[in-house]
Each structure stands twice: as C-alpha cells, then as structure tokens.
Amino acid sequence: MRVLIADDHPLFRDALRHVVGQSFDAAECLEACDFNQIGAALADDEPLDLILLDLNMPGMDGFTGLLRLREDLPDTPIIVVSASEDVEVIEQALACGAAGFIPKSSPKERMCEAVGLVMNGEIFRPEEILGTKTRTIDPLLEEKLGSLTHRQRMVLQLLARGKSNKQIAYELDVTNTTVKAHMTAILRKLKVTSRTQAVIVARQIGRF
DNA sequence: GCAATTCGGGAGACTCCGGC
DNA sequence: GCCGGAGTCTCCCGAATTGC
Image (cartoon, rainbow, N blue to C red):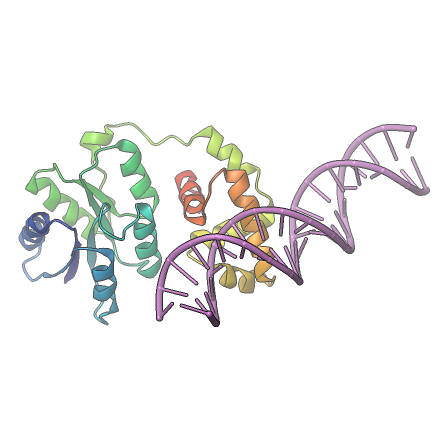
C-alpha cells in the first residue's frame, strides 16, 4: 500500500505517517511539502492507494489543487487534512471530490478511523463539526443551473469531467471558439469568474 | 401571413497569462 | 520571445415568438 502525505508542516507529516502506520502495517509513505513535490510523486509509475492532502500548501491555490489531483487520479481516494473547521470549507472539499475531511484538531484515533473508512470505499465526514445537518442545495444555485441551455449543460458536464476546451470541442464536434463562447455564457449565468469555480458550483448542486 | 424581435449556436479575431 | 490555453467581443445564421 502506497500513501502520499502532502503537508508543508514536517511535524504534521510525521503525525500523519504514524496514523497511517497504525492503520496499515505494510504502508509505504511518500511525503510532499508543496504541489511541485506532489507532481514529482505522481511522476513515479507506481500507483498510489491514498493521498492525505493539506489544502493550504504552497502551490495548492485553494481547491484548484484538489480538483487537479481529482482529475489526474480519478480512482485514488483523497482525504483533505486541514486546520480549517469551517463547514463551508468541509462541504466544498467533499463537493470537489475528496473522499474525506480530517480537521487537524482531531485525535489520532479519529484520524485512524477516517483513513480506515476511506480505504473501505466510504466517505468520511467530520460529523462532530457538521453535526447532523443535512446538506441543503441553495435554491439560487438551482436557479442558476436551470438557466443554462442544453448545449451549455453539456459543456459544463464535460468541463466537470476535467476536459479542456479542445477536448470538449472534439467531443461535441464544434470548434474551440464555440466552446469558449459557451464557457463565457456559463460563467456569466453561474456568476463565477473561472472554470474552476463553475465546476465547484456544478458539484455543489451534485448534478455533475 | 409577414416583418420585426429575441435567443441560442457557431465562428473569427483579439487580448491576457503562464509555462518553456 | 514563443506557444498554447482561456476568456471576451463581435458578428452571422436560423428558429421561435410577437405584434400588426
């Protein structure tokens, strides 16, 4: 079993290594202190079984780094480890495809539980923070999505799968410029400023 | 029925930005 | 500096809708 521990704090990497070691005896731990080192770890041909990822790391750029990893490694579970205990951040991380969210304040036993759950194919939600509140979809987001045309939804769907404009153009059999025009309309209607934010909104609604 | 208007889809030209 | 990707502006075309 190969686990990538990505955190800029050496002490916390050490703690996470202990957590992984406690959960899986034969685990091989790789470490990264920034997004470049994550890239170097991914360049290795050996597949990863789990990634423990700090959101606030050099080169991560918020959720963009998580989305990029999600696109590059769609089958590898990613657990976000963060000092943030903001419900919005947790929900957004899960919406971006994280298999779990571990607050750094969690006791070691809880972290082991999270790693075990995720490796069993389940999603770990820190219910002590989220409480029992069920995720409600903002009706405003629903409305924004509803304003998209059929073609724009298709573009957004392919965008959410990590496709570039060029790939979307190829799949829809249109030119690159047409895709970009749709993209501009999507950004305007969803009231966002980048394709990454558009994907986040789409995933928050859970349609893509 | 027909002209005007609106809207969505498609494309060309252009700028901006980041990576090499 | 060059190149590729992303985003914006503008225009054209066709279909649907509206008003006369």
